[in-house]
Length: 340
Image 1 (spheres, rainbow, N blue to C red):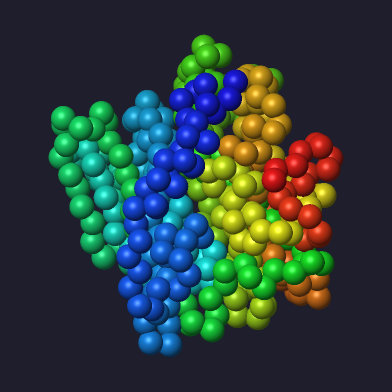
Image 2: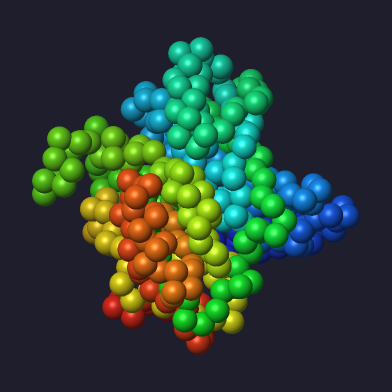
């Protein structure tokens, strides 16, 4: 099974994005980098600072929330997908606005969604300063949840990946599970296997938990530990591992190779999906985070101190997963995978 035959064609999506961007040419004075420049967030000068904006949503993970009638965690996902992106340019998230489009604005559902947004905001130390709830019965089947994050960073502390150099080390932080990407494929796997979200996992995986419960595990928020790292370490690059999996890392800097010779171990949910869907490793690592939700690139001299700081302030597993070497793309030698 592939992402494409489950309904999402990555190559077609990339071409669609290129065509969209080809029509967006306006660049206000003070924009840092190219407009819509392909990084995790956009930046514009504001005095000695850069204001940072990024936007994202929960995606089809909301379908599992609907199936389980459990809506109190997807707000965390919505916050996480945005604040984690803002971190990737060296910025501290400040504020957030949400967009909730609904077929039927059910107050019981919106209250639960609000609880998740509140918890996510607390974990990320941001304020939700506004939003929009749209009643769109002719357009929406169920609901969609998305949002936009405002962050800031001193202009001389912006991190765009341009300082990455050969010999740098890659530090990985574990994900909490699938996070909020690849759910079109994951849901297809469950459906084709004739399983239910209410079923327990076979072979004793996640004993006592249902498939739906594990698939609804909220996206991990990395704000606290990354901000602590910024205080003491000259970070060269940061990657939020979301849709497109390992392809997220070369977005930082091309013409170098990211060698992942000691990757984090994927959680059991990934092997479950791979086995049930007969999905090859190449596809898995370009769709899902496969156990690594965030990657940080620092000099080899800063490796030990960086790992210590992250471990002291994070609930995630933290370890060196690889290094930057000559070449191109991302290489995982133990699985003979090379993305370039």
